[in-house]
Length: 310
Image 1: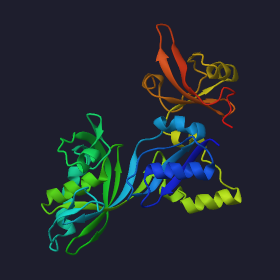
Image 2: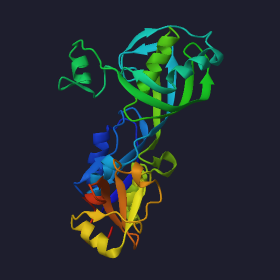
Image 3: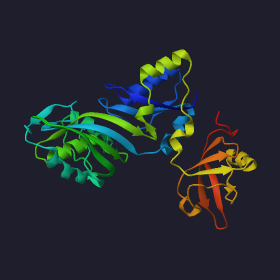
Image 4: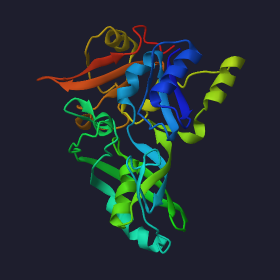
């Protein structure tokens, strides 16, 4: 059983909890996930099964979220899982006052992750340091917000705004909630978070644990094909003779008859490629390298020596 599960992670589960439960349900040890979600967050958690765990590093990295931000409230963790440390009535706040500030989060921005996060500083997790009461300087990182869009606004003493956010990996939506509240001088915290997209998988196509168990009981569960999360990569197709040699670890000279439908050769030298046989079977991941006389395609990850995806 090799492929992916597009899991709709439930509230209260860590990503590790989800991996452990999938292992038990499928009776297979080799299981991994494609990007951590906080326990309180729900939504898309890509799960790799069997040999597909080797493909996680090559999957699309962009993320999509639906976030509910509560304004006028500040917490230790920048979400409602933490202790409330300050509140301020914001009943006079309107959406019109908030909208201009959202542009501060558009594009490439410098973001300070929450102190309660899994980032390591000098070999120690920030959340471990925070729980021990140790003060530490949280490293600032550059992230990119591709899109931020208002979905809903609810006024009141502690107004809430719902946002759709598309971002690069490493972005903390909790930090956006915190910083939006700081810009308004009233505090802000993340009230709820749903991941709507990850590794090329969407929430609409995800399975809950209950749905997964039903499919397993009825014998209809089939993992998502291993190539489903690799469609963002350029691809090459090898003739039969070259495919056999490539699967044995040999480097193959790049020639015109090897199809390259996505990009020109000049743009592919540093990019991983999906490699297929001319029978359509997925062979693995390769890269191109230039020698003094030619361009060579060499294997980085061979899916199956037989050249068949199973």
